[in-house]
Length: 354
Image: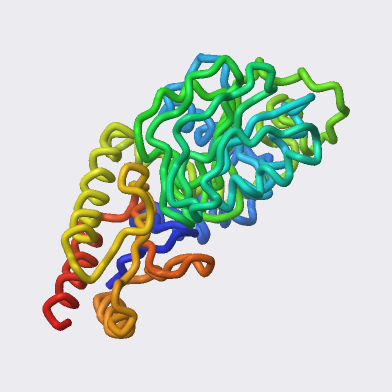
């Protein structure tokens, strides 16, 4: 029996996606060749990456709106650099809400002046800052929609004339937003879309070409757009599994459907965290992530017993990030509601035995 996978990443994937992917490793497209040994220039794989790119735009509601979808390498961390390389001419504005936005700020500072419009660092990133001003002369505003480590999530985004850039690595395709408000979205596949090895970049093409610097070919968004995301050999397996996951999401009802499921999962768990006297949430209630729920056990002497119980129940990946400790339940799209119920049952069992 498969474990209840609450791992923060690489993420849980739908069973049917895993089955199709494993079959493709042996015999892809009934060609008696493995997916990972065919030419990336062959028609079968070109169809895969084109389908993946089109599905991404379709699910986000960005078809025929001047956007392009790319599958690149280097993880979301490479986008900290590429965003600034391509967009930062004089000054950019950043919202600092966690580890990944801090790293994005560090990379972008190499290319121009940065304005940190707000930060929750002094409070250990336990909330999302709300009241801040974005300089109108900024080349872009960068934010992180969901903070995997700390368990916070932006529930709204600023209305601004400045181009809006967002790292959506850990909650992409999980909830409905007006994605046309964003000029650039990037997301590492391994958090909510596929295996590690590829990064989705969705970019409004008219924001490019405004910096004065020369950009190396590999780091230039225009290069990848002009080559249909095939400038260099893509991560064939990661792109294929991401395509399967997007097909699965479309089949079950798209983002509007999965958002309702995700809401049920997070409500079930947070209600137990708040009800059970043995546990406590880590971040501000209004900023709680629907993807990554972080919590602690109030009595350290019960931690060993709790760990034994959830492991016996077949739960995987519940330990909190090494930088903050506690527990973290990552409830990505493919995690079934039943798995959350198993965790809640374990928490209630501990309460009875305490």
